[in-house]
Image (cartoon, rainbow, N blue to C red; front, top):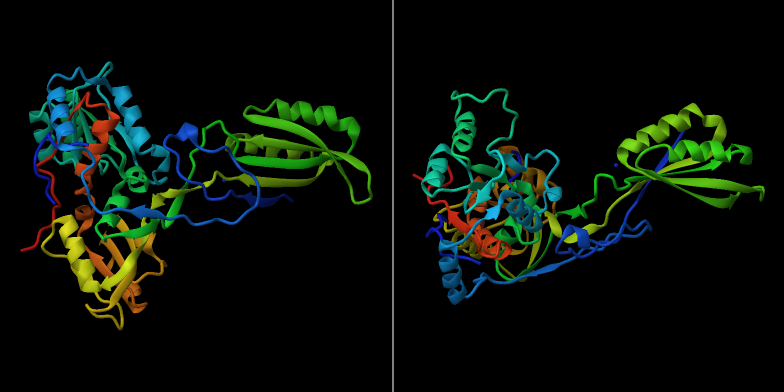
Length: 429
């Protein structure tokens, strides 16, 4: 995941002189679609942590339905690329991705573009792209973005440039959900937590409900010094795009009535409001800027802090993780004063590279793909054991679950193929 099980089978397995304050909202449950999220709350309150029960692994779709859908795929009419992208965003909204990440549609053939075959992979290498072309893929969903740092040219000189050239020549779109899928309630980290057994779980860093680009992010409140200046101030504020103004009466400390304005604005509009207020400071007083924050989401966010229903030995957790990820070996760093028989109740995990997410979290065990040498030392010095499974080994196994989810979201109108070439570049010798 952060910083920038070999699946068997191919098709037939489915289903932010002025004072600033912050206004927060109570932690609210996730909603299925962004437009159904609760309205913005602006009262002060504490954040209430939420828990989510994780069940044991299980099939998402009955075998008979799998067979029926596999037959339907053979005669599917496909879907327009934009419709497929909308479904992908419903499943893992890109607004939940980390700000540093490069997610979404990365390569797009000229429209219109119909998707008959969607090809899933953890990493898009040249070998995997050739496999996708053999499967006649119209869209490749690569969990990791093959384009992360900006390309200054597109030539045949480097393997990532060649990926773009080959994809465009073959009219293959490329999409990456990456950290949006990490944060999603039904995403990678939730899948990784499933391997621990029955537990309660909550995001280590919860996401906030998404907001529209033109939606207000700040509220500026101030009093108009003299009533004769009210029309001038109102006219100026109403002339600023993406800013809405309301008036209300207040009383000064001496009991005099005064008009106070409240301006709700976007981040961009805030700059223009601030400039006008600075240039006309003689017209207003008692100015405050309040940050309007969307509510935190119960089941959405980076990493997971899991509490096992019953504590088990460290060696038991290791065996569970190996079985879930289909690995013969993992790397282990024992926490100071710990042994293989030490009991584990709380596990902090993060798919991929977990250092930045797990840092400072109190738990008996950290589970992730990779951590730096010094971050491991910091953890073990606090008595926290660390299991490292290699980066993509903590992600790749989720792809079969993703295929099942996509089959339902796309109503089986698109053929779904899981890469057989994709694998972690590191292996045990």
